Length: 276
Image (tube, rainbow, N blue to C red; front, side, top):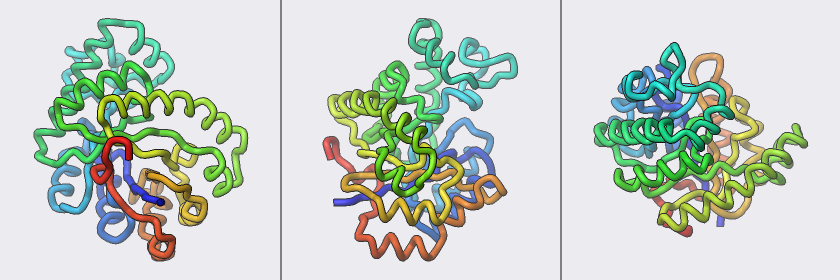
């Protein structure tokens, strides 16, 4: 059985992203969006989501390469001199793991983002993290701890399987193979922890190796190679130059028809149950 979740990430990042996600939902195959609740256009995203009752909305927890939800003075060890969250993912990961003071601030920021999402009144479809930082064991622990208090029931597992990824793209062989090899053990641990916590999840994703390049031809090829199980294809659509190709793919009639003919069932994270 093949089931597919089609997601737009970074909802709220800009008006261009918000426009694209709304258009892709109204006129295309996008069913799900992940909101950056502290981003500059987050309130506009919330307003649009309230007017789109069929759009499933989740929380895109941002702990790097973004602005914090909390005042800078409450998370001084998470931000740089300009008030931005860490841009170096490796050094941030080390601090998250080893620095107790950083972990306390991290928990406060995670909680603030969940609280901000709850205040929107939107139903929480799923949770994931900017740059997939929820793979980090410390971040995952904090999201599991805090998220269950706020009704979290599903989370993205960011693992892209090598063979269908390679067969559909026929490019970057070593990068795709190395990425799958590195992520596979972490994904296995993550699935186990989610199962123990009673949190539903997908089996695999597509989009990790082709961020910003999910063109119509790429998506059509992925649909032909789509494995059995619950898969997610995530996009970064934007109605500016940066994301126009991805927006075009999401609204392409050829893809709408190909998906219909494929027999793949379109679902949301909230349709899953733990262990599904």
